[in-house]
Image (cartoon, rainbow, N blue to C red; front, side):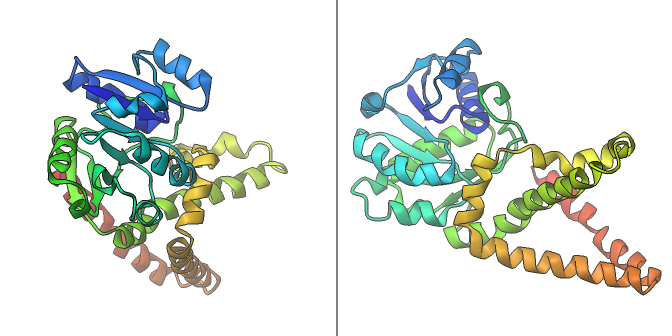
Length: 285
């Protein structure tokens, strides 16, 4: 099995480790514009060797794991170069622009649009984690546009590394992911900004920061190079979620101003059911 991973970071690198765990015979090659990433990935055993774009015609799998704006450029080039039996998948956090970009490509049948719901706030080859995808959901869009035998090939791999499969159209994916992922990252970035701005005047503010702050602001450590293009591509959906979020924040502020603590209690109590929702999700995994 020949596997080429374009973009050797957390997602691509973790995919490499998980594939190697279930297919020890696999030859996994990495392609990255950052030569240090290639060298680091080889040294860490994430990939076997550096790959070349001109060699992907022999690939069984090509995994495109680059920022979503770069994917719009790279993916058509990949499809131009692959063999008839190669399956290509791209793992970014927005799906409509990607699907639209290659909709009329002659080798559209060789592509499957995916979004593994997994990751951390870290980046680069050293962030790769074996077992990252175990029990995680993989959203697949427009599966009907992928050749059936190639679908099976990809799905078998996803299941082998422990992923749960869910099907969704690209627009629905982008709408839902704006709430549960994109908004979460914006909230974390802006909380971090608020505290950093205040810290300039109160040097001891971080001395009082506990685990609650740390867990809430964790996503603010994520790569701006990855997230700025995501916000650009999913702007319409992200703006809609922000308007709802800002409305809720404003309402909460008004309750405080008006000393309506009964209403504040009721607001928080009603949201406590998020525990039941999340527990229910975890029990299905």
